[in-house]
Length: 239
Image 1: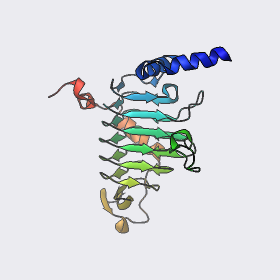
Image 2 (image 1 turned 90 degrees about the horizontal axis):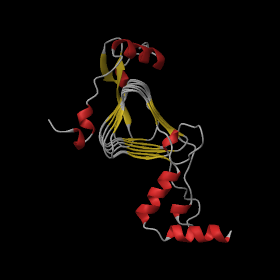
Image 3 (image 1 turned 90 degrees about the vertical axis):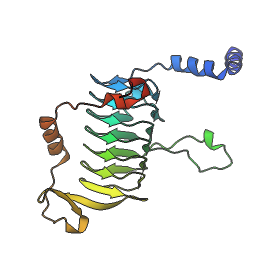
């Protein structure tokens, strides 16, 4: 017991950066990453063993993937195949964050599935722990515009578009365009007319494909996307 206390005291006296490096080496996890994918060298990963990235996917400069609750053999942040995650994206997982295949996120997007507990203000919030129940699910081939925040227990349906700087607090149905704070649906895709129409004009008989049908269709037409790797960060070069 005395030795452990002594070692802790010695560790606490080390420079902060050295302490962080030692902690990182002690917790060396293996990131699951698919063939042909690229994670920019500046991306910050906390909880690598609980993160999975599919094939032919890019995670861009300055992003942070943070797994709050690191359980053995549990994937808490998953990014699918043929995805492009823009610069400075922030993922902080509660139970899980799942980004399905073919999804595009722009710069400065935030996926906040966990927050610090605030039950007892007599304890520093830094020490209160974080919530672990929320799931954020982004469906197949969604486009998340610049500066969007997705917060809490939220599902964005496949084929949907979220406008820049929107704040998503509630589920968004498939093939919808939503904007604002909080995000509200302004249009839905009509498969009958092959166009985005105001929600009031989309007919009830409008039949949309299931997510599996939609994914199969995309895979057949676009098995591997030509990802704009150069947009991942300055280190990739200029044009």
